[in-house]
Every structure is written in C-alpha cells, then in structure tokens.
Image (cartoon, rainbow, N blue to C red; front, side):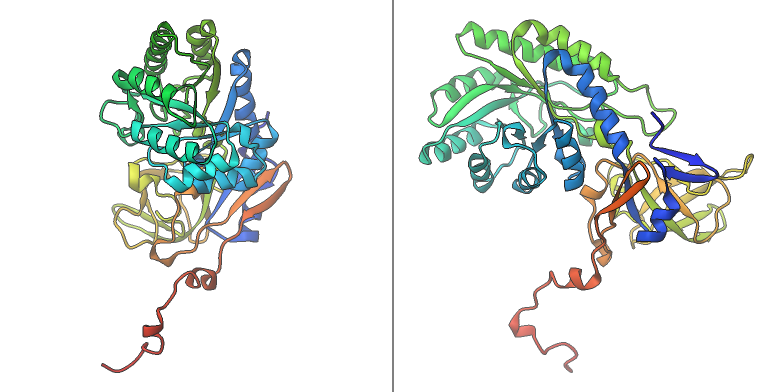
Length: 429
C-alpha cells in the first residue's frame, strides 16, 4: 500500500490529493488525515490479535472526530471513552453500545448514569469509592452494570512520565495488593455484574518488557481470584503500542510481537480480551499544515508559522517535537540549516522545534507537522482567541472537511455578558 503522505511531482500529497490543493480550499492551519492509514493500522492490529478474538475499542481521546469514529466503526471497532461527551460522540458516530468501554479515574454520577442508560459493554472501575457509587446508582435504578476492576500493577512503562499510568502512586486504578479485597466486595454489592479485570500502563511503550510484566501480574491475579472461587471472564489489556515520530526513534513494538505476547500469557486462561489502541491507529495518519508568516534571519534563524501551541500543544506540554516537512519538495541537494520553528501565540513555549534543519523557506510557503493524527485536534484550544483549526479527511483522490473552522462570531457568541454590564462599555469613569 502506498504511504499516506509522499512527494509526487515535487508536491507533498495525502494519498492522491496534493496538500496544497487542500490548503487553497480551507486555508491554514488545518489538520489533514489519511483514511487509508487509519484503516491499514487497524487491520494490522486486528490481524495480529485475531487468534484471541479481540474486542478492539478505539481510544476516542486520541482523535474524537465523528468521521474518524465512523470509519473505525465500519471496520468493526468499538470505543474506549473517558467522559460522557466521548460516550455521546461514539454513539452518535454509530458505534454500538455493546462495544463501548468507559474508563477514567473520575467518572461523575451523571456520567455513570449515562453509561447505564446506554447499556454499554463495560465500565472500568478505578477505585472502591467509584465501585460503591456505581452500585448505589445502578441498584437504585433497578439495573445491573457490567464492571471490570482496573488494576494498577506498579509497572513502569519506561515511557514519558506524563503518559505513564501504571506505577505505584499514579492516580489510575486500584493497587494490585488491594484487588482481591475489592473483587470480593464487588461480588457482594447490588447492581454490579463483575466481569473481570482491566489494566493500562501507559502510552508509547517501546519495549515488550513492561507489557510482559504487567500482563504477568494480571495473570497472577486471575489465578488468585479463581483459587478463591471467583469468576474472571474478561480482561481489558488497554493500549500503549508505540509509533515512531522520528527516523532515529527506537524501533516500535510490532503488532505481531505484541499479539504473540498476548497469546502466550492469556491464551491458556480462557478469558475474553479487549484492547484500547489510540495513538497506534491514528498518529502517523495525520498532519498539521501551516503557512510561513515570517522568516527572521539571524542566530538562530526563526521561522514563524500561522499554527500555534493552541493548535498542537504536545511540543509545549511534553517537550516533544514533531517532524516538519515542506509541502513543496526541496531541490535536490538543498542546504538545510538549523531554525527555530515557532507560532504566533504570546508565550515563549509556543515553539514547535529548536534548531530543526530546514531548507531555505520563504514567506507564504507551506509546511507540515507530521505524525500529528493523535492528541492534536483533540487537545487544541482557542487560547489568544484563535479559531480552532479545521479537520480534513482524505480518501483516495477525494477529501472532505470533517470539522469546519468556526467563525469569530461563533466564538464570541459563546460568551454571555450579564445584564448589569450591558451598556457599560465605553462609559467614562
């Protein structure tokens, strides 16, 4: 299969569509997604896990556009949601409730009620207080909620600390040593149908070792629970498969190796398995396209683009740099010199890359921040009263805007001026 983004005739293309053509249609900055890339990643993971008959629940937080959700629904995916809003998105996009898992450490009473109303596949409970609240709520409504207890296995995923979720002291899950007591309690509470366990230790896991350790600890818990006569029918193994951002990144854990590890540990245990991939499915299939506003020659050379940290916050938040490619292919042998690539927001942290080697660039040229399909648009904001960037999906030789850029009137209309301030603007002190 052709790469989702490649140069053709000197122009960067998304599948069969020149990126410059999309820019001319929607303006910059904008997000651009490849449906073929999303599809390929999903099918590769599904094939690797097929022997265990998985429920693959796409992690909506990675990219929550309803067009993206509908694409995955058509491929057979469910959804992993972490808020009522994500639950509503998944349902609106056509993902069946029986394929939706609700995760998250701080579910409100209203969110738990929404999950009960929808009769979703499972709620991953992350604390004993949440378990008691869910029991009270479900029992009071005469309902039964299917539940998995999320284990905190105390395993370091050896990834960025901000996206590690399975260490002792992380806010997620029930400590491994408390699971037996929590499981016993869950079997006694009204309104609770206990299905099994869940675990997720983080994202961008570049080695199989941490997953092996976490999975082995879950397998030990399954054995201990069954020794007490407690049923464990299902296990949710979360997500975390890595994707490379740069050519020199460590080789990613392959879907086939991951699938082999899953079969090795859980194959003999007779449990139904669920997975929550997010970044692995959409990260490489998206880019943020921007125009160059100014080039400030000097030491360092500073390239100012019209995208900013409100559009793509990962560099400012995690100190992670996305690769940058010119939309017009540089001439063969073009000299690449270091440049700081920055946005227009009034923050020094509004810097995408420092000392990034780029060819000569002129005002008005287009550049693309690649590997931006995950945690890009979903984490964007209107800081500095900047309009949200539109999202565009490409499918072969066609493209469609799947989230339009709002107008300034739309944005300003969200504010409400109280009646005691009406007529005060411009009054003399």
